[in-house]
Every structure is written in structure tokens, then in C-alpha cells.
Amino acid sequence: MNRALIAFSFLSLLSTTGSFASNTDLNASFNNHYKAYQAAVKSGDKESIIKSARQAYEIGQQFYGEHDVNTVNLAINYANALDNKNPDKLALLESNLRIVETHHKENLYTIFDITLPIAQITFDKKSRAALNSLKEIGQKAEERKDYEFAAIAYHEAIKLAVQKSKTLPVARKLIRRNDDINKAHLPEVSVQRLTSDMWVASLDEARNRKKAAINRLEHVVKVFDQNLDFDHPFELTAHSKLVNLYEKSGQSDKATKHCLAIAKMVPWKDTQEQEPLYRAHPKYPSNMARRMKSGWVKLQFTISKSGFVKNIEVMDSSEKGFEKASVKALEQWRYAPKFEDGKPVEAVSTVQLDYIIPKS
Image: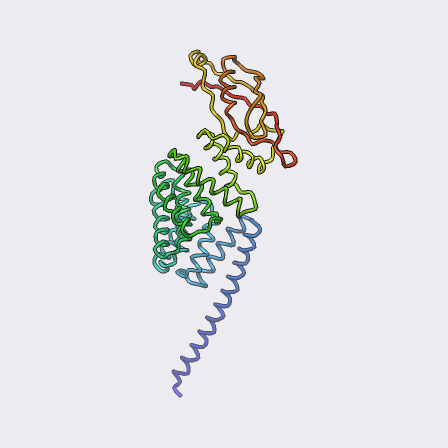
């Protein structure tokens, strides 16, 4: 037998055995650190989350390799544990985005998981670029006919876009596109679909398309009434917006059922001033404005079983000249009535209206 071949085979065996032992040790070390990370997340200990996420990522780089998608996901965990103001977070995300775009460009979900926090961090300085990144992911998801994921990407882009006036045009277009996808591919009861409904209603209201906004909000209320047996902020907001829209449209009778619905959802608190669902702002009395007078009026009134205001009395005021305008405005307000034993009852409340001349 060739002695050189025997020596080579023996060295190869040693090398393989050493590598196996090393991988076993790395595997054990990684598992320990990752379990520590999971425990930290469960406990909510911020410092422990950061420490264990960093350690799991560093060991993962050795165990999986720097370009492996598992390593990228560990980097995302570590980055998400860091504060947005920490420069290491953005650097870590951007370096791993390059890895994904080079080695895993078909993995749209991982690209999104990195792109979203980058967009959230950079939006103030690079709003257009941040939005375009999320839009592109949504468009690619549409091309793949992954409509649910496309809706998620557009949803996050809209959440950013509505924060700034200069990106509102982008938000409007995305809201309409997102709505088309949601209506065609998502169930009515999904949170994304309901969120889209609320956005569309707000968009229609802003454009003075009251009827369209009312129809969309009534749909939201109907979905909750027919399919969901729990209260949700969307439902409460929909009822509140409908009160305002019906009152502005001169349909007080249709606003009533929504006043009652809110009253059932939100317990009456005698210890605090009641918040009106709809308010008409008083006209500043011209004689007070000419005299550059500021002032206030405190009023007591009864909220009817239907949420209307009646029996208004002026309790006190800084100037008599403000009283008439205050009463006239308050007559148009709507409230959620008080409920006792499951039934609406009349209740007394108070409010103070302030009149302030702006400083020049």
C-alpha cells in the first residue's frame, strides 16, 4: 500500500473529525444563545434581549455562514432589539439587505423584514426613497399574485406616507390600490381590510365625498355587527365618524343609532366632563371681537336618551356677550347618552366654552 496515501487518508480523517466536533460545539453554543434570546423576549427584559440577540447572531455567522438566510434573520432579530437612534441598527440592516439582494433576491419576505425598519428609520430624511422601497415590494408581490403580502407592504407604506403632507399624494394612491387588493382578495373581517376601509372613508371625507364615506363606515359597522362579537377601536371610530358625517349632512335622526352604539361601548363616567361626539363651534360675537375681548362661558345641560342637548342653562360667564353664541352652538351638539341597566337615560352634564383672541 502506498504510504503517502495512508498518511493522507489519516490526516483527512483527523480533519473531518475535528470539523465535526467544532460544528457540534457551535451548534450547542448557538442553541444555548438562541434559547436565551427566546427567554429574554418572553420576559421582556430589554437589555437581555439585546445581549442574547447579538450573541445568537455572532455565533450564527460562524455556524450558518455570513450569507445564509438564517444568519440574516438573526441579524434582523438583533437589529429590531436596538433603538432606532442607535447607528449600529441602520448599519446592520443595510449590510444584511445587500446580502439578501445578492444571495436571496427571490426571498421577498426577508427583504421586506429588513426594508420596513430601514424605511421607518430613514423616513424623516429620505421619505420618497423609503416609500418607494416598500411600494416596490408590494408591486413585486402583486406580480407573484401574493396579494395578501402585497397588501401588507402597501399597508406599511401608507402608515408612513400619511405622516407628512408632502407624501400625502403617495398615500392617496396607495390607499386606493391597497383597497382594490383588499376587496378582491382579503376577507371582510381581516384587520388589514378594515384598516383599508377606515383609510378610504377618511380620504372620501377629506374630499367632501360624504355619501361615499358614510357608505364605507356603515359597511365597517355592519361587518362588526354580523361577524365579530367584541368591541374594537375601529368600530368605535366608525360610529363616531358617522355621527359627525350625518350631523354635517343634516341627518340627525341617522346619527342617533350611532350615539347609542357608542354609549353601549363606552361606560359613562360621572366624575369627568362628557366628550361630545359632534360639536358646532360657536361664532365669535362681533361686538366682542371688535373690543378684542377674550372670555368664557360655563353651561349646564341635559343629554337626552338619544344624545341630543336640551335644557341649557348658563351657570357663569366672564362676559354676557358670549352667552347667546354659546347656547346656540351647544344646541347642535351630540353626545353618547348615559346607560343604566342596559337602557339610555337622561343625564346632566356641564361644559365650558372658551373664546380667545389670537395674539398678533
